[in-house]
Structure formats: C-alpha cells, structure tokens
Amino acid sequence: MIPRYSRPQMTAIWEPQTKFKIWFEIEAHACDALAELGVIPREAAATIWAQARDVTFDVDRIDAIEREVKHDVIAFLTHLAEFVGPDSRFVHQGMTSSDVLDTCLNVQLVRAADLLIADVDALLAALERRAFEHKLTPTIGRSHGIHAEPTTFGLKLAQAHVEFQRARKRLEIAREEVATCAISGAVGTFANIDPRVEEHVAAAMGLTPEPVSTQVIPRDRHAMYFAALGVVASSVERLATEIRHLQRTEVYEAEEYFSPGQKGSSAMPHKRNPVLTENLTGLARLVRGYAMPAMENVALWHERDISHSSVERMIGPDATVTLDFALVRLTNVIDKLVVYPKNMQANLDKLGGLHNSQRVLLALTQKGVSREDSYRLVQRNAMKTWEHGADFLTELKADPEVSARLSAAELEAMFDLGYHFKHVDTIFTRVFGRA
Image (cartoon, rainbow, N blue to C red; front, side, top):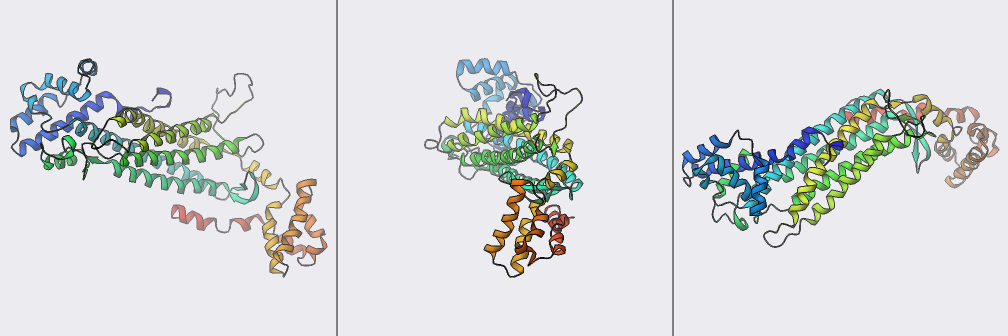
C-alpha cells in the first residue's frame, strides 16, 4: 500500500487509529450487553464509553507496550485502561483476542466493499454514457486480433457495462460473505460469555453472528472475498487491454486522454503512450495475486492458529486499496477516452469488404449451393483481397460460379453496413433497459 496507488477514502479504513477505534467499539458494545445481562455494573459500561468514546489513541504508546508484551490486543487494552481507569477491569470479559481482531477485520472489509461498490457504480455510469454516445459508431470486430465482422464501439462499451454489472453483484455477495461477527470466547464455545453479547455486538457493528466461529471466523469467507476482488480486477484488465490495443499506432481507433504538458517519453517527444491502461494491467495482476494466499488461509490448525494473521495484515489493505485505485482510474480513462470514428471506418474498409464474407456464404447456400462449395467460392475470392489487395465485391461479381447464383444487385445488397447493426437496440435494451 503506497501513496502512488492509494486514495485517502480507502486508506483511512486501514489506518491504525481507525482499527483501534473499531476495537474500542467492539469492546464497549460488549460491555453494554454484559451490563444488560447483569454481568458487569451498568455504571462501568457507561464509564467506558464516556472515558474513551472520543479518545485519539496513542499509536506510538500502543506500539511501545506491544514491544514489551508481544501481544497487540493486550497492548491496546493496557492503553485503554489508562483512559478508563478502574472500570477497565470489566473490558474484554470472557472474550479472546480473535473476537476483537476478526470482528474488526470484517468491519473493515465491509467498509472497503462499500467503497468498491460505489467505485463500480461510477464506472457503470461512465460506460453507459459513452456507450450511448457511440451506440452506432461502426468499428471492425476482431477475433484472434484479425478483422472479423462489423460491430459498434457502443457495443464494446455495452459489453464492458454488463460485465461490471456482474462485478457489482460479486462485490455485494463478497460483502455479505464477510459481514459476520464473532464474540464467542476461547475456542468459540461461549463458555465465559453469553451468546447474546455476540448478537448485540453484531447488530451494533452492522454484522450478523457467525454460526460457529471456533475462536476464529472461518477463512473460507475471506477467501471468497479476495477471490471476488481478483475477478473484478480481471475485468478491469480486460477493458484496459482492449483500450491498449485500440491505441496502437497501426489501429489508432481510441486513445487515453493526453493532457496539455504531458510527456510520453524521455527520449522520443512524439510519443503518446497508453500508460494508464498499462498501469491498470499491472495493478490487476497484484489484486489477483492476493487471492491465492487468502485461499491458503482457509486451512488453519484445529480451532485456530495465526498463520493467517500476517497474510491478512498485508492483503486486506493492499488488495482493497489497489482495486479501489484501479476502478477510479479506469472510470477516468473511460470518461475522457478519445474516440476516432473516422479511423474506425478506415480500418473497417481496409480489407475491401471482406467482413461481408459470411453473408455471401449464407446467400449461396440459400441458392442451393452446398456449404462446402459455398465456402470454397467465397474463400477463393477473399484470398485475392488478402494477397493482392483486390476489391472483394468486384472479385465476387467477376467469378462465374458466384455470378451464376447471385446477381450483381444481390451481391451489392450484401455489402450494406447497416445490416450488421439491426439488433443493436435489442442488445442495448438487454444491458441498459432502454435503447
């Protein structure tokens, strides 16, 4: 987690001060429940809130205590006692460290998911706006990187939009998956704390009780969360890669916005490089990489060990901060993307009408020619365009086997670009609910 690829809204979730405030809230809400059950005095619960609710915890002081006691939660509780006074003896009654650590982590992951969902919403809005702007902007579709049949640039963006609709759903499910709370004590049996305390803390923190926490919340939940982030990152990369290809000099159908004063190369003043989408490709690799250690965290020893702890201290902030930054950067790229319809049309026309080959093939089959012979006739004339730059329509008209089945007028009608876009409205309605 470095400032270059971080936004303050997300990094704030993972700052030590935020963590300690969440720890305090968990402990204080637990005290409220314990007081309600008559386990501790009500006055003590009120004092704990009054003495520490608005405290700015001394991170350096907690770190200093931890260096001595070698335990982060004990260090925090020791520091908390310095504010609360004698009633601090009622804090952490019947609880274990994982009750605090795991519940806090899930609160942070839920808050991070909320930001990521908002990021995706902003990206969806940008994609929808640009998709309708270029709904009928013709461009050549490519398979294997080779010209295939026409599509529209709006359809490219519509495809990205529906993909990020799925990304949003994945983030919602991931959020729900980790929104659980554990206040169950050592090995999760509630031996020294009433389950009603867990229910109270869960409600107060916007979570639900973990059915069986075995002292730790099961890490399959977290594995699913980080896997979802990895899939969303892959969608970021897919769209970024498309833009990088479209910006290649030989293609030049779209490019990232190049701001006044921006420099593309330290050596070559003419360069305008796709640096933002290349950066997004790299960031996506990182986020995907965090999914694997999260999956390896699932297999803990017996009721708990802490092999997962060091992993989560790193991947929790890094994965969420990185994906947050990437989504916002991608939104900016789409919002400002420079599109070149004339270049799209020029590329579409570059192969002399070859993109109509399937339509001619199908027309020949409708005229009684076998599919094998139809394919042979169309490919024979298409290869002349590939190899010699001939005009595809002209070659078809001159081919006696083709002209014997299809008139010149029929062939010309098959080279109508609008034919390929007759169902664009249908697709847009499916994606956006309107055309």
